[in-house]
Image (cartoon, rainbow, N blue to C red; front, side, top):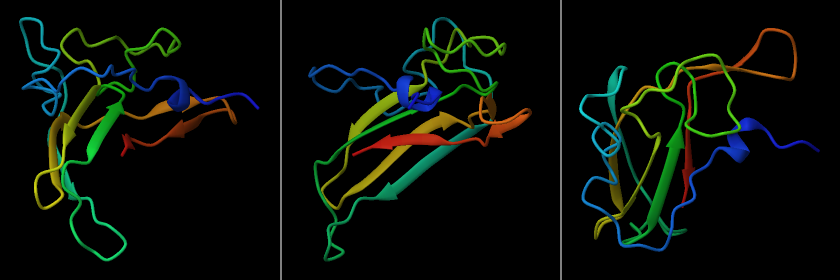
Length: 127
């Protein structure tokens, strides 16, 4: 079975310490400007099987830019790469299990299942 674009475009984070902008996708890849797109905050709470917050859980996210393009060599969609948007971030949950990322609303993009098939705007999570 062939992997989908979303399965092969995930980030390859190292084991380095988290940087101060890792949770801010609006600023963590900016090169002299701001990324294109509607700003949004994605937040939530990681809980265990008893409903208690899970502290210090590593959360990694990745997504397409506002035009629907991933910053990855395997993405050949015609939307342009945003020079100020890297599309990935990570953070640790706080003492109560909460997290929050600043980012842009990702764009939809076509996929190969059928003619004119589109994946809706979405963000990938790894816990």
